[in-house]
Image 1 (cartoon, rainbow, N blue to C red):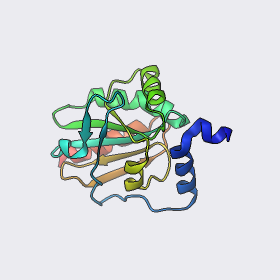
Image 2 (image 1 turned 45 degrees about the horizontal axis):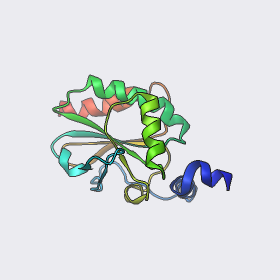
Image 3 (image 1 turned 60 degrees about the vertical axis):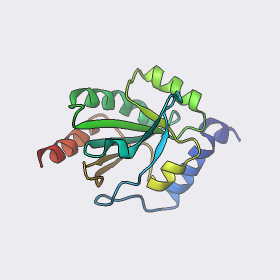
Image 4 (image 1 turned 180 degrees about the vertical axis):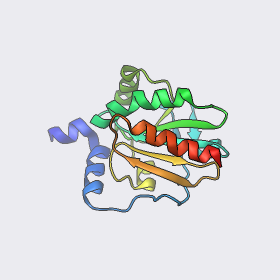
Length: 167
């Protein structure tokens, strides 16, 4: 019961899905469309709003250790990219939006994060692990997927984004 309380039902579902060898959305496939409230509940953001831009889509959770490493690096990457061409959009799979919002404040990141406390967006992407980050081209196709995060992985994501921008 302690595990369920700590990671929540959505987290437990991720652990189960990850160990069940499910097939995630693959590179070359269209990115599943979605819309969700921001963590503060101020507005709804949809992936469709960013059509024509490169989207770095990052799924994270407050209980995810590698997310601690990823978030500041993604913030630096986002700040180094042209906002007219590239956007970083995060999706928290935390079951408690307040906990997720506290975590983002603690991490000191400023990019938009949506809340997926019911796991519907995560289910569309059938995430293979946490965090999972996608690079989506302006036409809405997934051009890169990165599972997990360690120092230096931001360079791989930057390279994927730059490859799209160079075309």
